[in-house]
Structure formats: C-alpha cells, structure tokens
Picture (cartoon, rainbow, N blue to C red):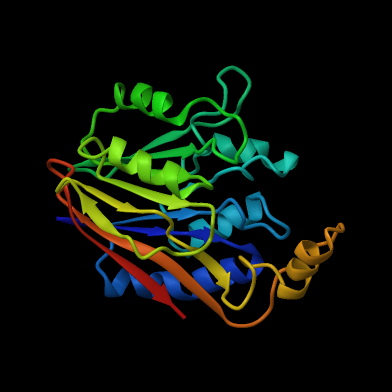
Length: 256
C-alpha cells in the first residue's frame, strides 16, 4: 500500500510560506510516498509564477496542478514545459502550452496525475468527460489521480461517479472550502468534492475580508489584497494499492 497526499489551492505568499513550514512534517508523520499540490493561486495576486512554483517544489511537492488561473501570468508560459506541472487537459488542442497529464515513475510502479477543468460557471473549454475518456485510453498504469478544478458541486459529483472504478482518486479544487464528503466510491475511487486551500484561514478564500465584502456589497471595482493572520493547510491523504490502483482509505486533514 502507498500513500498519496493531495493539498488544495495554495494562495499567495502566505500559502507558500505555510506550505514550506508544514509540508515536510506532514509527509514524515504520515509516511507519504507522493505529494500533489494545486498551485494556480500561489503567486501574489493569483496565477502561478516561476518563483511560486519553485517554492512549492522546494517545500516537497512532486507534481503541481493548476486550473483557471494557470495562464494568468504571460511571463510564466514557459513554466509549463517543466515535467512537474500540469494544466487542465481540456484546453483546446493546437495552441496551448504544457500538458494535462504527467506520469510519475516511482520505480516499481508509476502514477498518472491528470488535471481537468469544469465548464459549469467556468470557461467554455472542451467537454471534461469526453477528454477524460480520451486520456484514459492512453494511460498505461492503474494508479490514476485527477484534480478536477470546477465551480459546481454537481459537476464534481457527476465526474466522481463517472470515474468510479476507472481512476484511483478524484480531488475537487477551486472553491477553496474543504468539504466533508470524502469517501471511496465503488470500493475503488477516492473522492472529495473540494480539498480546500492553504493560506490565511480568516479570510474570503485567502482575500482580505474587507475588500471582498466591499466588492460584493457595493458592486464596484476593488483591488483584492491577500489577507493577513494565521494560515491553515487543507488536504487529503489516500491509501491505495499500487498494483491494481484501488484506493482503500481517504482522510481529510487540516493543519493550523
């Protein structure tokens, strides 16, 4: 049995610093074999940069997943040539840099990490269900984990049930609020609707509460500021059989 740690959206400088402070201890205490971290909001002001990606890798991540802010920073386009980062695989083919799938070679076994983005209340990318079918045809390992970066809980739930028995785990990201519905679907697929975030806990998804409230209250343009104060880290730990890809246990974690 192997253990995989998936950590939710890292937000800004505070999130990167807290990840660096806590990740090594979490991995040691839980005998983690593989670590995946969503880093699409890790740069100051959102998006991901070379600097924030390097900080996540130095902290101990094996793979960085992203989402709708993957290409927010034009200067970071070349970052997606690196083999430790993925972008949503359902961006249209032809003009998009990077890959939506990375294979981790662990010696005696391998793990596929896939990134997809939802389309309900999100950008109109290619159909994520159809794209997932295409990807699965070309993956030669039973150990498959998906970061499904989506807004609607219904779309995430539907994808989890659609992939039951087809993947080892599906982790929802994007909404930054950890859900309490972790489970093993069909005796095979670890699932959670949203893993949560890393960054200032008393905030609006990492943003200073006053600016977030004013934006919603007055409907006027507001420059969001990263919140200050104590951070927390949200994630999940999955135990899976690396020989057949079946997950047997999923636990939520919150580290304050």
